[in-house]
Amino acid sequence: MAETYDLVVIGAGPVGENVADYAHKEGLSVVVVESELVGGECSYWACMPSKALLRPGAALRGARHVAGAKQAVTGGLDAAAVFARRDSTVSNFDDTGQVSWLDSAGIDLVRGKGRLDGPKRVVVTAPDGSEVVLEARAAVAVCTGSAALIPPIEGLADAKPWTSREATSASAAPGRLIVLGGGVVGAEMATAYTSLGSKVTMVVRGGLLGGMEPFAGEMVAESLRHEGADVRLGAGITKVVRDGGTVTATLDDGSTVEADEILVATGRTPRTDGLGLASVGLEDGEWLSVDDTLLVDAGTNADEPWLYAVGDVNRRALLTHQGKYQARAAGRVIAARAKGESPDTGPWSRYTATADHDAVPQVTFTDPEVASVGLTEDAAKKAGRRIRTSEYDMSWVAGASVYDDAYVGRAKLVIDDETDVPIGATFVGYDVGEMLQSATHAIVGRIPVQRLWHAVPAYPTLSEIWLRLLETDGRA
Image 1 (tube, rainbow, N blue to C red):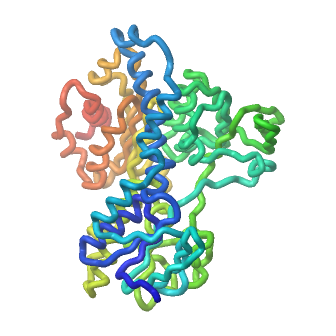
Image 2 (image 1 turned 45 degrees about the vertical axis):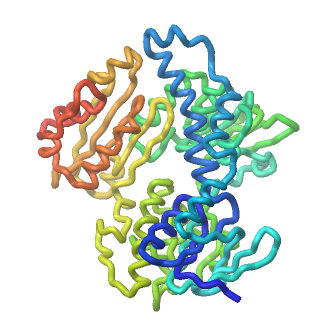
Image 3 (image 1 turned 135 degrees about the horizontal axis):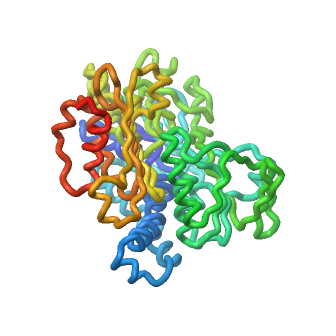
């Protein structure tokens, strides 16, 4: 006999939890299906453990920058203590607390691998091989996320490479580590393991942190090199061989690099294999395209909207906070439609994920940090926007003086010349992540430069960068 709910959510990561929570708050009965740990990738193998590994190094470097504090620093990180702190952060890879939250929220949980078996029908294969059939009155939300992409490099898969999961769940730092890829994961893990004492070699096909303002990647690369990492830009790997405990990577210039482990951080792939998408006219293993209400764009939804894809799996913005934002909209719109309502699905309504397009914030926890939101100068030009930009050295603002002479940073504002409204901002420097929300408010709220002039920054704080950017722009 099938068990029936208003909403079936496949995937109990932060995205699935939020879809379930928001729909349940609107009166729907909800069940969540999870094959691993409740709390998902972010809680155990991504955002939280990576930041737990990064924070001790950042704190130590911060102390070394300040006279009076640096004299008290007598050694490096205690790697064992760092990994123990990481274990505490991820609750020792135990999801009891997350399961308790689901229970307290009134959301049911079925453990096992879920797959679609036709419209509104999900079959769950439990760890013991038994099956549970779930039927949805209103909707099914696919929140299965993404996995690390292993590129087709000769010998790489056989070399048992690390992905972000192994890097964030390791119990010790390897003596030598190759990092293949220069995106956020590669840059953050290179930062963490350099701090933990590994000899890190980064191999990056293009520049570091591609897609961001060029100065961001340049400053992070310079910092990594200063800390002892070997950062090779414009380079690739053609072959990988593991012989016992040694990994040898052959680069495209014929040179070789030896290490104890190799971390692959070259992109993501959707977790849709074995999801039963073919049973509803879709293709297993593919990303799921959606509209702004997170409804899957497919013939299966032609007569009645029922299939949603939320978070990484739809490839709109592969960030936990953006997935949770989508989840809030999806939970609300699923509930409204289930009740026969016609919700407002126009831009910026509570039922749509409008910010996915041009207002996505992101912090990269390297040294220095990179905080960005909206469009880069290059992206804005490619979109046909008429823009102007303003840049300023963050070490020149008064708030940087508390870091002694060690502050390294830069900020850039991208302004739409027709509306006089900021459409992009990038901050590189120490502790800039906490400054990002002000830029996000300015962009989402479409606040003109003339009005921003009256948002007076407290003195002496790093937020004075806003005043300097506006002065440099000269239009306020």
